[in-house]
Amino acid sequence: MEIPSIVGAGLIVIGAGVGIGRIGGSAMEAIARQPEASGKIQTAMLIAAALIEGIGFAALFAG
Amino acid sequence: MEKLIEQFSFGLFFWQLLLFVGLVLLLKKFAWKPILDAVETRESDIKDAISAAEDAKKDMENLQADNQKLLKEARAEREAMLKEARELKNTMIESAKTEAKDEANKLVANAQAAIESEKKAAIADLKSVVAELSISIAETVVREELSDKSKQEKLVESMLKDATLN
Amino acid sequence: MRSKLTIRLITLLFFLMPFLSMAGGEKAAGTDLKSEIKAYIQHHLEDTYDFSLYSYTTDEGVHKYIGFPLPVILWDNGLRVFSSSKLHHGESVAQAGDAFYKLDHGKIYKTDADGTITYDESHHATNVKPLDFSITKNVFTIMMVAVLLFVVFSRMAKTYKSNSIPSGIGRILEPIVLYVRDDIAIPNIGKKHYKRYMSYLLTVFFFVWTINLLGLTPLGINVTNNIAVTFCLAILTYLITTFTAKKDYWMHIFWMPGVPKLMRLVLAPIELLGTFIKPFSLMIRLYANITAGHIVLMSLIGLMFIFKSWLGSSLSFMLAFALGILELLVAALQAYIFTMLSALYFGSAVEEHDHDHAH
Image 1 (tube, rainbow over the protein chains, first blue to last red):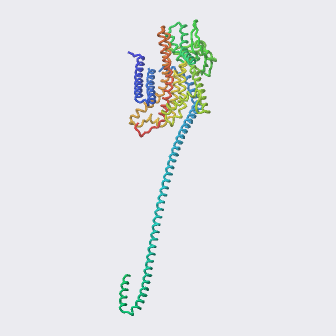
Image 2 (image 1 turned 30 degrees about the vertical axis):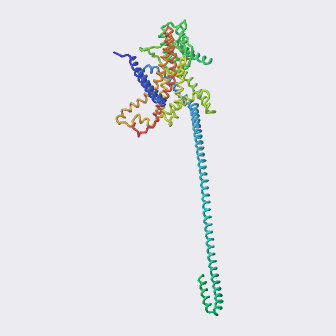
Image 3 (image 1 turned 120 degrees about the horizontal axis):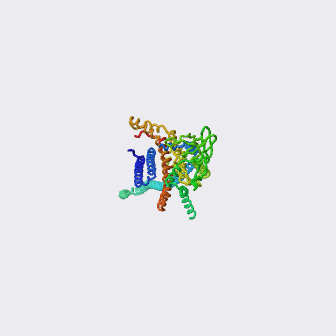
């Protein structure tokens, strides 16, 4: 039985969402713990989120 | 993916590349370089001004410290001078005292010596006077007594008695 | 107070304009609304040969296009230039010299005088496609943005000549320029090398940002959701990274220090692949973010006309409004991410490692 590609796309979105969510959550915790480092944490968070997002999109388009 | 490749428009890519590279080069020459240079000079000016102010502050502090030091030194010098003067005074008084004492001692000694010598001279004079007196007495006595034997003896005796007084 | 209100009203009108134009299409079409909105979105995502603000169909069934034509430039055994108004949006054949061209599904094909287009079994046109250097809507927008950026920033640079403090628009732009320098370039590239890359980073940042913002206006512009545009930007980042890379960069790719010899052989192809994946992800990220944003935003706007009840329509209006504001953030964020990651890659290219430490 062939699995439609939309299912794969959904899986990708779930994976990317969980990943970005975890990054955001951890970043929030880190900022709460060290408010003075919020700038650096935000930058690192954005980069990490962007990388996951990139993989997610690449997979979406490959599928 | 296939859709993406199909969508790829070479004309758009060509124009984008041309326009974007042109934009980068033009902006580099006419915008980014002047702007960044101006900002950099401004920043370095501010930095210089701040460091100059800091230096001035430091200089001021140094100056103040120097003044303080000078004041301290002057005070110490005054103190030392006063002390020296006091010492000088003391030594001068001391030396004057000792000198005076010496002088006095000397005077006393001289006086004593003079007194002694005067005394000796007086004694010598006295002795010679006594001797002359005694000779003259003796003469008279001898002249008288030679006529009277008992009186002679008596005289000698009294004279001898007197002589022992000396 | 009054001017504030005016500005708000104008802003609201700006947000409403695309809906109004679509409302016009809805009344007259009479066909299936859903498929029409779908076609409209599809059309919006494609590049066009004329600058059309919007289109509608009259009661007589004639398509009316509001906008202005742009030059079509083809290379087909010699340069052929003609106005895109000749193409009539694919409804008639354009003649240029002795050759005939016809627009089919947004692409120009060479045809005979009758404009016959043959299709293969998968509905792809088999006609000859001439090399197309036309000034399309996107090319035109890129040109306008390039001119705008050049005028704004060269004028801003001039104000520095008389005064070290910027005046006018420079007051707003200078903090952004400094942000790119102090928070994107210097931390990622390092104080020693960052100056070489500043021109590219600043241009990319402002270019992408401006283009993304223009995509949110009702002009119907969407440049960054063309793969060719993001591909061009990504390939430039790749080329700059590759050609300015120092010895250390190549050593870390082909002969990773600090790992066992066998591992180095395994790592080399992975690292080499990584250098291609990096710009590829840059390309896809920008493209996909903007495309997805446009599709979702337009779908929500379309929903307003599918819902016949005021409740559903106002709800989707609110959603579209909120998403529009979110897209404003995304426009800046994607420009920031693109610049940031480019700076990161440049930084890895010029980084000098201290091999005394275990890597």
